[in-house]
Image 1 (cartoon, one colour):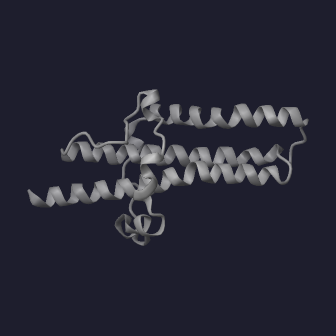
Image 2 (cartoon, rainbow, N blue to C red):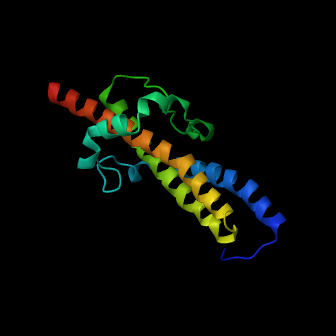
Image 3 (tube, rainbow, N blue to C red):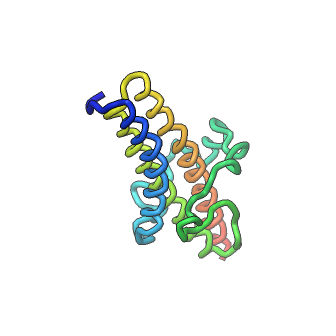
Length: 161
C-alpha cells in the first residue's frame, strides 16, 4: 500500500471508483475518432501465435461463454458487437475496427483499475488485481477472437472479387 487512507475512504473509493472507471473509460473510448482503431495497426494487428483466432477457441473455449459478456458501447452511442447485422465487407471492416475500440477500452480499464492497489492493503490489493484481470481479459480475448474472424471473412470476400 503506497497511499495510507482510512478504511472507510478505501471502501468508498473502491465501490464508487471501480464502476466509474469501467463506465467512464467506455464512454471516453466511444468518443475517440475511428481512425485510431485500425485492425492493421501495430496494437491491434493479428499475431502469429494467435493462429487466426483458433488459439482463443481452443485454449479459452471463447465460443462457450462469449455471449455472456456485456457490451456497454451501445449505452454510450457506440456500435453493438453482440450480433452481426450485415454481410457487407464494409460493415465487417467497421465491425473489426469497433472491436479494436473495445479492446483498447478494456486495456485502459485493466491498467487504471489495477492502479487502485496504491491504497488497498494486502490482501485486498490482490482482490483488486484479480477483479481488474477477470473483468477485462475475457472481453479482450473475445474482441480479439471476433476481430480475427471478421478479418478472415473480409480477406475471403475480397479474394472472391
